[in-house]
Length: 429
Image (cartoon, rainbow, N blue to C red; front, side, top):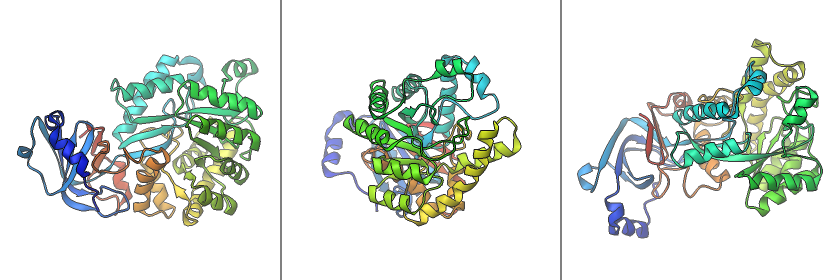
C-alpha cells in the first residue's frame, strides 16, 4: 500500500510558488518496491522536488503537467527500491598486509583523501546512508559534514565516537610500547567514571553515537580472547552518559557473556553477535535492540587468514574460529526472531562490495524480503530516522536505487546497481 502525501502537505505544495517552480524530477519505474516487506507495483512515477519525494503515483506522469524545469529519468526496465543502508562501516581504511606501514607513513590528509574515495565507492554501490562505527574522530566528522554540505560525494554518514578500555579491543595493539603510548586515544578509559568522561568527550567532539567494545575482538593483536572485557559498571555508565546527551550506544560483542552484559546495560545494537545464545536472544527481544551481523567480515577474515600470510598467530586463530562460526549463529538469531539491521564491517571487507552481505544473509536462511527490510526500514529505525529515510514515500528524502532484475527473486541483483540517487541528486545512471 502506498502512503499518499498528506492533505496539508499537498495544499502547501500547490499553494507555494517556490515549490511549484522548484526543479522537478520524474522517475518512471517499471517495477517499484516503495516499502520493503510490502507489495511491488508496476508502471509508477516518483515525483521528486529538490531533495524530497513529493508524490508516488500510478502510471507514467507527463512532464507537461509540471511547472518549472522537469527532468525525466526512464527506469521502466528496472526494479526500483529505496536506497540501501549499512549500519557498520569503517570508511577510513581497508584490511590488508600493508596496514602497519600505512599507519606509520600516511598523513591524516592522505587518509582523508582515501576515505573520500571509499565513501564514493560505497554510495555508487547503492548504499545511500551508512553508520561509521570506528574512526579517528575529527577527520570522520569532517567527512560526514563535507558530504552533508555537498562539497564531496558520499553516503549520508552517521559517525560514532569510540569508547574502550585499556588493553581492550578498541585500544592500540601490536606495536612497541612507546608507539602504543603515543597512539593511545583519550577515548580509552578504566572504571565507570572515567568511561563517563570518555563518553562525554566523544560527544563533545562530534559523535552522533557511541561505539563500545564489550568483548575482545578478532583484529586486536593480543591473545585475550573474544569474551567480555568491559565491566558492567563501565557499560552502564557509558550508556547512561550517552543517553543523557541524546545518543545511542552500539556495542561490538562476540561472546554471549559480553552480549548479555551490553544488552542489560541498554545498548541499541550488538555488532557481530557471533556467539549469541538463548539468554541473549531473549534480551534482544525484551529490549528491542538490533543485531548487526557483519557476515561479510567473517568471510573476509577467514579467507585472508587461509590465503595470505600477514596476520599474527593471535589474530589468525581468532579469524578462522570466529569468522567460520558467524553465519551459523546468525541463522539461529534470525530464526529466534531477533531484529536485524544490515551491516557489513566494510573496511575489513572492501568498500563498495557491501551488497555481498545480502547474499550471505540469504544463504544463511533469511528471506530476500527480510534482507531488504533490514537494509532499509530496520536501519532507519535504528538510526531514529524513519521519518526521513528508509522508504519511497511522500515527504522523505529521495534516496532511490535501481537494478535490472528483482532482488526478491535473486538477491544477487544488488551486486550490480544501475542507478543511484541520494537526496534528489543522481550519482550513478
